[in-house]
Image (cartoon, rainbow, N blue to C red):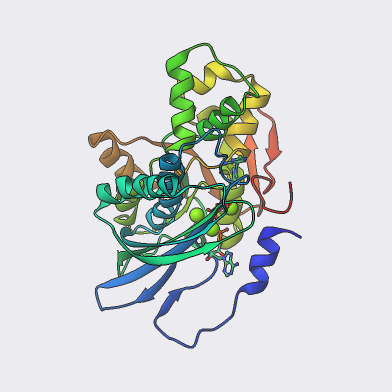
Length: 327
Ligand SMILES: Nc1ncnc2c1ncn2[C@@H]1O[C@H](COP(=O)(O)OP(=O)(O)OP(=O)(O)O)[C@@H](O)[C@H]1O
Ligand SMILES: Cc1ncc(C[n+]2csc(CCOP(=O)(O)O)c2C)c(N)n1
Ligand SMILES: [Mg+2]
Ligand SMILES: [Mg+2]
Ligand SMILES: [Mg+2]
């Protein structure tokens, strides 16, 4: 089974309610609530052993990340987060204080965005902790930063750096080592405490048109989603990819590509916009010391994602990042 094929089979061609503006197929669903604003809702689950390990992350860190990954989907819709609900399936290996600490980790991030916890559900489970967070947000009615919004000739951009999170995980799992303590800590923090790019999403939402996706499954996978949804090709340049000093120190070029292109969980925003809007975005972000980098262009001559390597070869980037069931 393939995760994405399965999801495609769940899509319906019409909705009972006309107010549904975006259904299955983007980072969050959007439905009309008033003339000027629409509501945005998303849900993501984290499973012990799949998304986190109890012996490498604290309950606070696990809670923080469970909320952060959902706020990231809200950011990818150009929306702001308002409310959250938490469903938790608890095995006997988790003590009450650990669970309260997990909620404290969520609260810490929720306070930053002034988000209210509205409810949830509590059940038992045999073995592993499962935490499912739903976030509800709000977006200006005329904003649609959809994956399907790319156009021929667009600039492809990404916020922040890519690859840090999966390198941080490799360090946590002791698959690799790094002597520089501050670089090591930086990469691990990027894995455990990703920053949802809400402010960046707000800047992008002000552009005339932009496609947008957040990086959960890996840069190559997210670019393929934009390419598929927009039915256009994307070409990125390896030399332009924003890579942190810490990651450069850690990786040989083979490992670097694995982390940067296919690693995932960076929770940066990747998108496309017109050349004119890109100039505007770049200037605004520069004024605000926000990191955004041009990494490629959208093309109509093919429908795949390609990368021009540093030695000037063009390779196809398959949608082969993180895929539940295909590992
Ligand atoms: N089991 C499901 N039932 C109904 N819709 C689903 C299901 N799983 C995913 N979707 C929908 O499919 C679309 C893509 O989901 P996906 O989880 O790949 O996106 P994402 O949340 O941005 O990525 P990630 O989960 O990797 O962070 C979304 O609209 C999502 O709501
Ligand atoms: C112990 C452990 N092993 C592997 C990973 C890596 N990982 C898990 S899920 C995922 C994609 C995003 O999740 P989803 O698609 O469900 O939103 C990635 C990159 C991890 N975080 N912890
Ligand atoms: Mg997403
Ligand atoms: Mg999801
Ligand atoms: Mg995923």
